[in-house]
Amino acid sequence: MSASSYIIVGSGVFGASTALHLIRKHPHTNISLIDRDSFTAPYRVAASWDWNKVIRADYSDITYTKLGLEAQQLWRADSIWQPFYHESGVVWISPTSFAEQALKNFDQLGVEVDIKTYSVEDARGLYDGLVEDADYTGVKQVLVNRNSGWAEAKEALQNTIATAVGLGVEYVTAEVTAVDFEEKHCCGVKISTGESIKADRVILCTGAYTPKLLMNSAPEWQNLHAGGRIIAAGVAEAIGPLTAEQRHILDRMPVIIDDNPTENGCDLGCLPLPSINALKYWGQTIFRNTLQHTVTSPPLSMPPTQLDYAQWDVPQALKVDVRNGPNSMFGKKHFNQGLEKFRICWEALTPSKDFIISPHSECDGLYVATCGSFHGFKFLPILGKYVVEMLDGNLEPALKERWAWDRKLPPTEKNTHWPWKELKDLFNES
Ligand SMILES: Cc1cc2nc3c(=O)[nH]c(=O)nc-3n(C[C@H](O)[C@H](O)[C@H](O)COP(=O)(O)OP(=O)(O)OC[C@H]3O[C@@H](n4cnc5c(N)ncnc54)[C@H](O)[C@@H]3O)c2cc1C
Image (cartoon, rainbow, N blue to C red; front, top):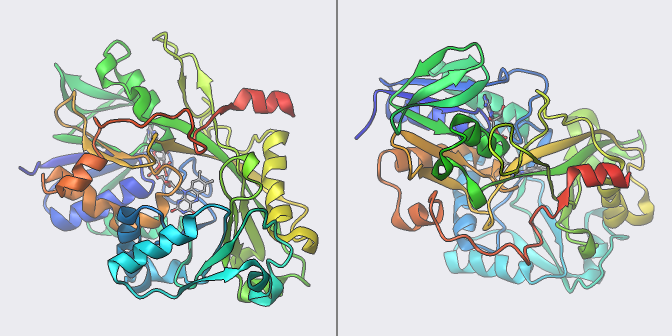
């Protein structure tokens, strides 16, 4: 059964895409998209606000391969996203079996993709020797997908929201302080001015803030809280301006994703930023920020309490982490030794890295659609389609189960993509 009014909290990729697909499917409903930041603000706390992001269908998991291919079709063809998409290719440097698995998935799906593996010797000569001096420790084959690429992230996000607003979605700039309930039924949200905004259905697309918002909403109602389902986790990134002599590399440069040195954690990587003659790098360390909640006793990871999540206050240890990128990918070519604009990007991570797109099982009228788990941006054109299917009760059973609020959580003890480090300890290391 469809509702007559919706509140979507959060205008990152999950919220923006949901607003667009919802107004297209149900043009006569009232849809409010609420975010603490204006969608045209120069800087936002959203993980989805960024310089550029990687767009790819290369996954070891076939479900996300399929979804990545579906999203890429729209990145290439739909006028909302096409102006921001650049199919530069992606180079994968990994000592794992990722290349094999990614190739197998495309094969199994029977799709033609310009993807190939190279021996390390041959890879050194690719793109005019760009990755000649990379750290190839343990790497047997280098995967290159010329049909992957990158997107201008903040511009694509803004255009999605502007399109939804043009179709009738109301954008509200406000801090949501709590989900509002009548008995155990969600009836809207409260905002920081003290007002309540009512709606039949509330969809939380609140990224890294989701566990804290649920706890703030009803500190004693433990079954409402995220528990082990979602952890707020951060990764640092920075940009590196190129010198006039180096700028020519941007003409043909692919995205580079690199697992080495593996002992430092997750992958690191690099994207071209031609609009500002620079490269964007991200680091390998995933970390949390565990704080005592003001009302309840269980501590939980949350973005720093400052309005801007203190995203520009980056400890020295994380700057070193990001600086390992140029060393690992370019070695003695010495691109970007002077990185700047270090930023911490806060994300909602689940133990399986699967999204949550689901009704909240404890509370009628409340829905959760977030948890990009460090790979959600590329699905911007299609996320909302699946959220609307979930809201309308039409989500296919396999996805319903995979993205459910209540699902079996895998153990995290050996998870290398888990935030083992604390932000405060990283400051102390500095
Ligand atoms: C460093 C880094 C690099 C990444 N690179 C890539 C990549 O290359 N490709 C890729 O596909 N993915 C990438 N990702 C993952 C991707 O960015 C995220 O999965 C995705 O952006 C998450 O979107 P979201 O809508 O769930 O959350 P967000 O984008 O964080 O949006 C949440 C929104 O909710 C708002 N909000 C929260 N609480 C409240 C409140 N109480 N009141 C009002 N508003 C509120 C926030 O202001 C924010 O705008 C990367 C992530 C990081 C951290």
